[in-house]
Image 1: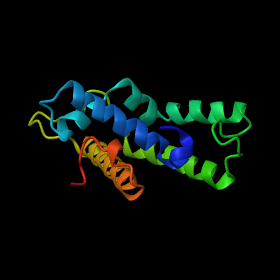
Image 2: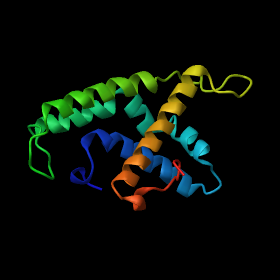
Image 3: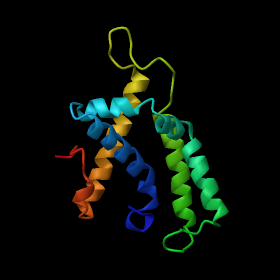
Image 4: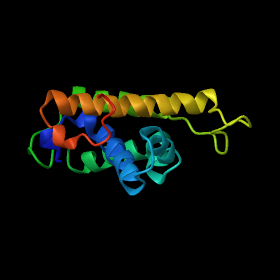
Length: 145
């Protein structure tokens, strides 16, 4: 899917959603919960949660004078501001503490549970957008059903 088919603000959600979907596809016995937990700790999770993903994306947009490659239109300042807010939110919600995902009792720590919940909400939101824009073929996890 290219940028002209969905708002820029959904770009990261789509990446997260598709990677979680791919994890589940490669592991059919996984539940959605297992797939999301497997995504946590992946290289892309680390890039997104550290802010590096957004930094690289902003740099690419800046090199292109903030002109969308598909529509050839300038990306509005308000969209760029929202993307910066999104970056800050991702860093706060997906904060990483190595080797602290589970306690000895195998229950997720509060901070890890917050990251999981945020990823779940991202997947729900992406599916809702797909459903509302009649792009049901992009729904793989069926979280909202």
